[in-house]
Length: 308
Length: 312
Image 1 (spheres, rainbow over the protein chains, first blue to last red):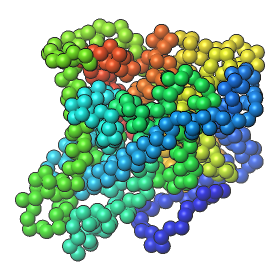
Image 2 (image 1 turned 90 degrees about the horizontal axis):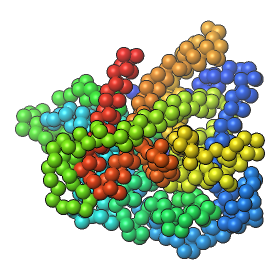
Image 3 (image 1 turned 90 degrees about the vertical axis):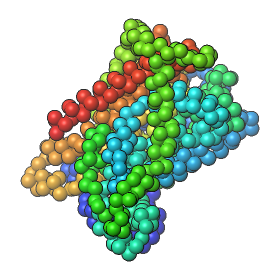
Image 4 (image 1 turned 60 degrees about the vertical axis):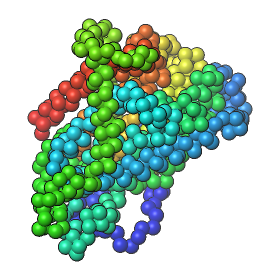
């Protein structure tokens, strides 16, 4: 069932001799739980299906709601469709709302946050992993400790800071504070630590600079982990609500989640309309996951968050 | 995370980092020996994390407010007030209660889902998508969908109950039910992340132990219990620790769904901080409460670390 097969890869994919037990999916899967009997398979299949239905039901309900008129939605009845099918709600949003602007902002902000975070974090992780500078351990300990800081704790002082810098209601104010991702630095550093230094030393002997070693040797070896980090940063930035909500008042600067929340407050709840706009704002990430899910799971496997 | 706080300490610092061995002394400054690589991160870190933390700490010792300028230094008065404030204690209690009732299902269900999906039945990508998809939704969308399901009259929840002959439930209006409703939403929304971590862990387990146990005649349950689960210990520790920290920080979905109601029964500590700071304009007091909470988070992390170290 490899519905989404991995796209064509470049032929020379670097070997990873330091990670001997790569996932061997086909064999491990079937042996693991079920044995060869028939009953366990049926039971597991039933459990999977029931859970999946429960997990998808709220979605399906939302989709059905968005495809009816407001009046029909308010009728009671267990059937998801209480009236005629209509695309009215979607049409209304696309005609009047700021949805295209918000979507553009969401894409722009999520992409910039991701690019900046990945750049800053991979460099820092490499420095922490290979550097010999003074204070390295202390800085690393502080970085790891920062993972525990609840982000909401920073909102008040960060807002004051943005006011001081006259950055409230700018893209910079939304983007810059999100670039600090101690967790990602830590994950990357752990991965870099596992790459044998012999590979780099050969290049160093040939006279390559540290930046060159990082760019041409370490980064290509780290593609799975870097893409895992990028994916999680992107999801986080796309869905971030609190900070953009606090720091933007100008509707033209809002992201989709923030904009949709303000619409809801302004008009009172219109279920079909808000469901339609909600689904529109969620659609891009869902499509992305559908396209890349095999790779996403494999990337997570290499973060070291997974296997023991 | 913090499990490996000493990881930096154990990493051997190889003396190779400067490619020209003869001038190592001069390069051992902050910017030498790889320090430049860390500088951009440290700049962001200092500006947008350390500074606000210090600023907040200072604020907590003053009577700073959103409306008044020139705050005055008041020493530990805010902290003394916080410790005697019943709202602080009740919202802390709510936070701990939420953490308890959300973490257990979030870890166990994620494990069960991953084991089932990994068991090799066809259609892997369908299950993966079904369980992970909610995690991709913004908090506004999640709360919108669930406000709809929890609607007292026409919501799916109560319609199902009444059609089965039960009394309708005040999902968000009954004080004894509301926090459970929030927890159910949270499990639905975020279990996919833990599920993915478990699934990835399962896929990177070596199959050799499992095969050996099977050859020795161990049945499926026996292998699950004695081979697979012990190998997942590391992942479970990680998932549980991350989950406790995440649950303690609950805010967004509650703020949008119930605004802490009914009657404060779902208000977590971070929402109280937000209310005091942005609605009550008392930034100094809000900061003090958030530092009391931060202390709690640190204590919980240290206790967890100790506990899991002893276990291992």
